[in-house]
Image 1 (cartoon, rainbow, N blue to C red):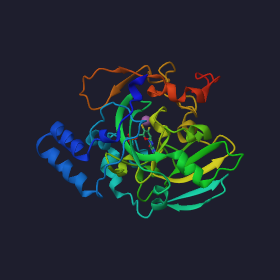
Image 2 (cartoon, rainbow, N blue to C red):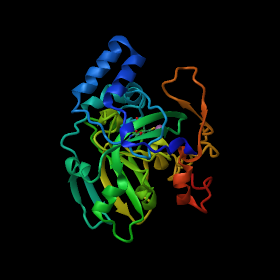
Image 3 (cartoon, protein in one colour):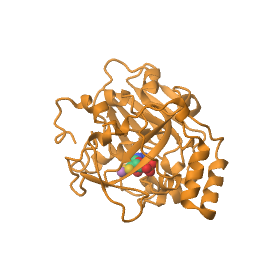
Length: 309
Ligand SMILES: Nc1nc2c(c(=O)[nH]1)N[C@H]1C(S)=C(S)[C@@H](COP(=O)(O)O)O[C@H]1N2
Ligand SMILES: [Mo]
């Protein structure tokens, strides 16, 4: 599938201006101008080199990406996070690193951002509920971070936690999930060059509703693996507990690789509904590993993907 593997030259990097123009053309009028202003008000927008791991799909608008979200800490409705996440304090921010590493400690976000070279990665994003988007992330490979904290030889998994702060995250006052939100990857999945620690999108900081200031992006897995607003990263020997698997193990497995042949009990995974193409947009076929089969299938050689869903 060459769809997701076009190699870009440095000169192909789409300037920020183009994004803004495209968005304001789509939205038009006052709304377009308003969102242009809100973008320019964030910290100085920069152009990042576009990674060769980017797809050549056209990204969704910033409007779509930042107003149709799952972030249950801020409510379960798709528009709740965009309404409520602004109260989250993201400065100062630090990540506790512990478990099977040589360099445990509390790392400031400013230091974490220097552990890799920020670049743009345009990735398709597939939620297990059946919708999809294309998102121009800013970030660097998680592997850069993991090498810096020096895993011990018995480390086999990476475990992540989201902030637990019910005073700002009102959703944490309800027992929808066993808070904090938890996720995990096998170490080889975490070290895969496609796995991203994202710090931004569309050339700017992450909107809070998208998981500021630091989130995971695992483009061949369902969206819920891409944990937001991370405050803890641990290396473990045993497979760590993960929020959705704890909540409903029959519906959500540990692996959660995008797989059109293995349906969720309530939603087909064979097709998906691209967000932002109108109410009557056609569903499209979902690809194995969300289109990254060539890049990641060797991680699962010999595994029954129906059993390890
Ligand atoms: N902490 C936290 N991370 C989370 C979630 C959440 O509710 N809380 N939702 C997940 C789900 S189900 C999806 S589809 C994606 C949505 O990411 P987006 O809103 O940036 O598109 O975030 C994932 N990460
Ligand atoms: Mo999701």
